[in-house]
Length: 167
Image (tube, rainbow, N blue to C red; front, side):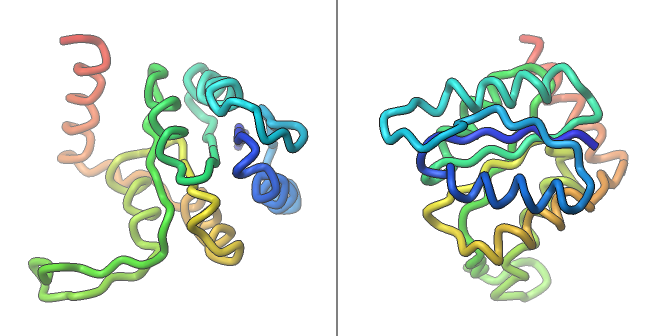
């Protein structure tokens, strides 16, 4: 599987660690920048390049980083065929209790659900809000989780595609 990576200065150091981690795991990695730390760089330059790669390669995935990951997800989701999910905090309290009565959840579960339910092909990480060890767990879980192919999720993704196409 090919993984496109992109970040600005806020996620540069973490992107380099993720890149090494992915290469050690045998993934094909395309680094879309930043290629060096520059506090004045602009995230759309790098995130757009990564999202374009994912947009044109249905088998690829992308991981983008920024300070919060918010704007990076916004940029990525401007591209056709991209479904970029945001992950920035391992703390997941459930208030009020969910339908099962839980008041807390596995802190990394949301990353798994973005794949299982939404077939997210890009993941945006908030570098300033994550511990490195959590990032590597999230990346591994996200890459290894397949889409469920449940009818309800396929139906919802079809509706997203209609919205993307202006229908």
